[in-house]
Amino acid sequence: GQNIDQPTEMTATEGAIVQINCTYQTSGFNGLFWYQQHAGEAPTFLSYNVLDGLEEKGRFSSFLSRSKGYSYLLLKELQMKDSASYLCAVRPPSGGYQKVTFGTGTKLQVIP
Amino acid sequence: DGGITQSPKYLFRKEGQNVTLSCEQNLNHDAMYWYRQDPGQGLRLIYYSQIVNDFQKGDIAEGYSVSREKKESFPLTVTSAQKNPTAFYLCASSMEGSGRDTQYFGPGTRLTVL
Image 1 (cartoon, one colour):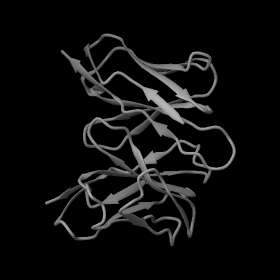
Image 2 (tube, chains in turn yellow, blue):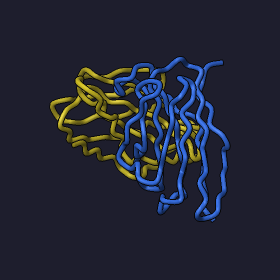
Image 3 (cartoon, helix red, strand yellow):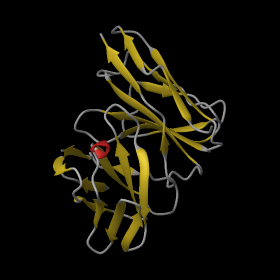
């Protein structure tokens, strides 16, 4: 099975940097997604990591360590609009149909 | 513009009534999914469809039914057998039927049972 852990809530200041962690224990792994979800809205795709290391995409970066079962999402130059929940999701290995498993999400509040 | 639409955005129903949530996509994606989201919980998979005229139960299919008669459409019916139907329902699609691709979500339908 899949077990994904994320902190429930975080608070950070506008203009600062915040790191949102995600750890997973899975029976198989073939990549990790990060999604952003504003309250009452649909999740939107942010990033996908399948190899170890850091992937940078503008103000957002995502890191993966497969040996440690660990990923983080790094948000730089925080803006008020970054207040949202951030979901990590594990992609299953190849072979047949296996579902993507979502974590419960980390609710980030950006304060002035 | 390509995307996924869900309607209605808010839905109210009385106990004992069935209700159908609409999901349409014009992304030409093979796979479509229905999730339920409750406060403090992750997205839970209700049903998924890898291809037209085929669908499979997810983790919490009891009390729900679906159809996939067209590639673009994947409606979800919440039946009176669903014990706790009040939730936020999200439809998603992905390009391939394997279920491992990036999923793109519709805006969601918030269902409230009165």
